[in-house]
Length: 166
Image (cartoon, rainbow, N blue to C red; front, side):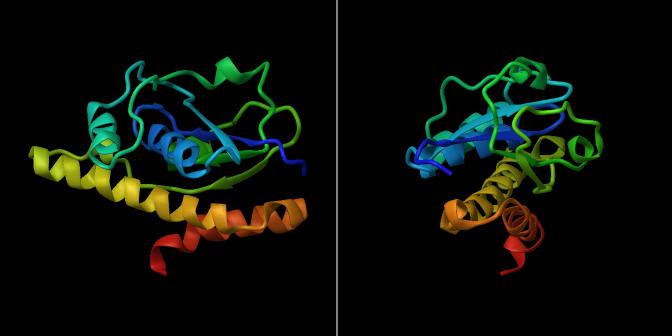
C-alpha cells in the first residue's frame, strides 16, 4: 500500500449514530492516515442529536455530518476498508464496491434504540463511542501496509469480536 490515506466506510442501516461516530473517531484519531466516511442502506435523513452531543462532549469535531445513502458512494471514492457496525447492515446485500475493499463486521449495540431518561441515552451513546474508539485504536496500531489482504481481514474481524473483552 502507498502512503496515501486509506479510504474507510462505516456502514449502518440508518447512518444516524454508530456509523457517524466511527467516521468522526477515525478521521480525528487517524491523523491523516485514513479518510473515513459513513453511509446507510436506509438512512434516517438526520444525524441523531445524541451522536453530535457525544462527539462535542468528548472533544471531537461534531459539524458537517449527515445521514446519507450508500448509493452516494457508487461512483467513488474507492474504499480500502469497509466496516458494518450494525447487525442488520451486516446481513444485507451490500453493493459491489470497486477495488475489492477489505471488510469486517464490528457490531455495536444501537444507542439510538435505547429508551429512557437523558442520562440513560447519554450513557448508551458513550458506550457505543467507547466500543468504536477501542476498535479504532486497535486498527490504528495494526501494521496495515505490511499485511496481506487475508491476514488484514482476519485481524479486523478479531478486533470486531474481541476488542471489548480485553
